[in-house]
Image (cartoon, rainbow over all chains, first blue to last red):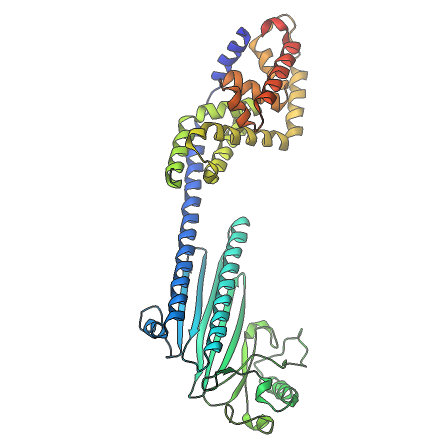
Length: 283
Length: 165
């Protein structure tokens, strides 16, 4: 085995380049940064989950707690019927603002539960997709991402409570979606567009009005890829304003060119007056 | 049980302290400074990224060697054609000298071994590892390591002559 020992000597004599030290320090610094970033993400996720659990269970246990939450800074309350829980993440390359509404004091507790569960599910789905996109972005070598979900009270009268949830995402291009829930506080029901009218005729009438409206408005041009009719579906997003008028809402691109963003069109009550089931909501 | 931070610090210390050992192992595969540097760097990054997979700190050496050897083997696999061509060129330029057997012949003979056989020779004779450790590093059992070791030694003897080993 003498040869092997000689060989071993020459093996031990392999020169070590001075660059090795620097390359390893770089690598260690890089791995350290990655680890700290992962840790931040994890602790952040954990605190959200914990907050959700505490907060939701408290709300379910005690409506008084829900009321009390309204006075805590950060848990902004816009009206007595609503608490909003906001999650904020802000990092160099990405940020998220996710608002989750919880409604209370609507006559029908079952309805409350259904709506609140829906809001939580939406926020969770939103957060998951945000996390998923971060992973994809990291794999693709980084990028910018901002998501923003906002809760707004559109209408709050003795009868009606209308909540909007808008969601926007900016990653290269931007997208924007908005949804409304029109709740009759006294009866404890969610209104649908068809439920306001005696028959289907409202679809054609509103469509016709919107086509004229768009033609008259020089500023708004119809999205060339979207043929004018039928413009609205039976359950097009809508809301009823404080002034008891009907507003029809369209997402970005839906009827206009993208640059106009989402638009909302007020429908004159005189146009649909004879088709209304009652004047409880619209006058 | 160590925390992740403690493990990280421990591994960091280890890769800095034994960087010359790791570099020589990598070098024994690729015979080239830049490639050996790349392999040590990549293996270090892989190790630090998968630190949660290191269950017991006492297995650190085995665990790291496994990553290092696999990184080197992966590198050879990816650069197979290039490596073969270099060897051919080397043969052409440096015809075997029949009368004088030098360290260089053994070195060249070890280089002619397959990467798997080279691994057992390097780890056994140059790094003085136990058969059990080599088995853990190469993810096989002791019997396989023995078989590979004997096969590798036999090839070396055939290549440069019995009396020199």
